[in-house]
Amino acid sequence: MTTPFYVSPQQAMADRAEYARKGIARGRSVVVLQYADGIVFVAENPSRALHKVSEIYDRIAFAAVGKYNEFENLRIGGVRYADLRGYTYDREDVTARGLANVYAQTLGTIFSSAAEKPYEVELIVAEVGEGPEDDQIYRLPHDGSIVDEHGSVAVGGNADQISSYLDQRHRDGMTLAEALKLAVDSLSRDNNGGERSLTAEQLEVAVLDRNRPQKRKFKRVLGGQLSRLLESGESAAGSEESSDAEGTEESTSESED
Image (spheres, one colour):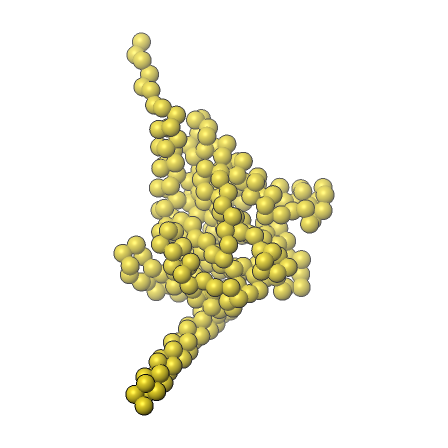
């Protein structure tokens, strides 16, 4: 009888984490940004059938990268949890924090179990509040940990580079068009520092709009509305550049005088 090959628990967990990270990195990125009237979700996703961004409950939305069948199972489980809790207690008792805790327990159990492979997914759970200070955004990596995010967050693909780009440029009080333009600019950058052109047909965009009169704040941004917002964001960026250039010219002429 041969002696089984021994692997230390630390090495086994490190191997499982590396396996999950590689699977997540192969997926296209998702970006989530706060703006003045809510939270916008932007994903590079040409498919109109397989969504990366979905509604969970009245004020809560879900975004994910990685293996579709795995995060779709998690999404369905989240919807069932929210519906049951809202029906049993009260709709106000369904929160992003509670949902994030449920997902963390599920992912953590799967990650630490030697009987099955870890999920190759990374999740974002967001809830829009009455004001920007009440918004909640949670990122859940493959191992079930919870990261409380503020302002902007990116997952999947080259998330580190995208997050750095967003941190330098995101600001409070942005309009939806400005936030969408920033998100698309960040997604269009590749690992080598080059830029690609992303069209409306290649994007999946949704918002949690706190100003909607309905209880359900989730809304997909599609077709002509998305194209108009992208054009509006580009026009605003162009006018800002023109204003900066004019200010520079005026300063130069004053110094010459």
